[in-house]
Length: 273
Image (cartoon, rainbow, N blue to C red; front, top):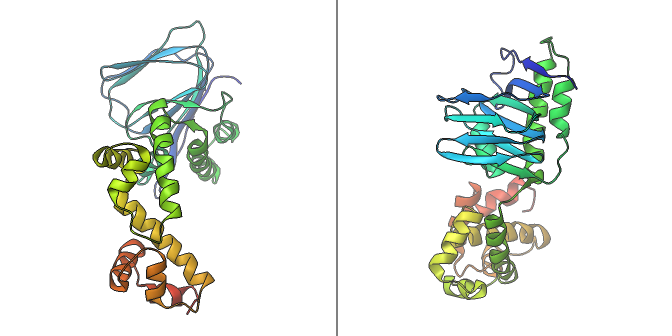
């Protein structure tokens, strides 16, 4: 593939939650220095060679299989340190751009690692869509951008620290799943993971972005929905007890907080009453 740069017209896509602004492929990426950052979000995939990425005062060595994300207006630079440094990228924006990166676990500018070094399929397809801006081309690029970000959810490797923390918390999640029918004190959960209650709360926040009690309540509500379907004859107070709530009134309050509706409204909405 020859080096190319595609400037996307955004008149028909700017109202979308996500839209592409530029797409490119360089056979050799030259040094790029941006003291004031870039106005859009950016995703780069390194395909061959090595380079140095600098974000504020941090520096990273990146090569094949690596990617890096750049948030808008964050000072950065990237420089080749091999004879050839081949990479592809896409710049994008939209009201949901930040939320999509949060969904991927990308909360700041920095590098990541892919499970596969090959050019990501949606990015390759974006580069092969017509270079022009005829009607529909930019919509197609934005559709592929959404696909790309969803694919990254599966393809991005977690950091070794995230791996360790997820592995450590896994027995706790399994214990919760098996015991949703009864009270689950924080001390008991901490003992399952062999950590202090305070440290367990930090693990939950870092890996699941929830407090333990919030996570447990969400799982209880999900279980209650299944019981409403499989046990339609059961009363609300019976379902509440089966998912670990001593009082039906508290179950209803939590159900409404999680779903935005009362249990009775949920049942009617899904034809379960």
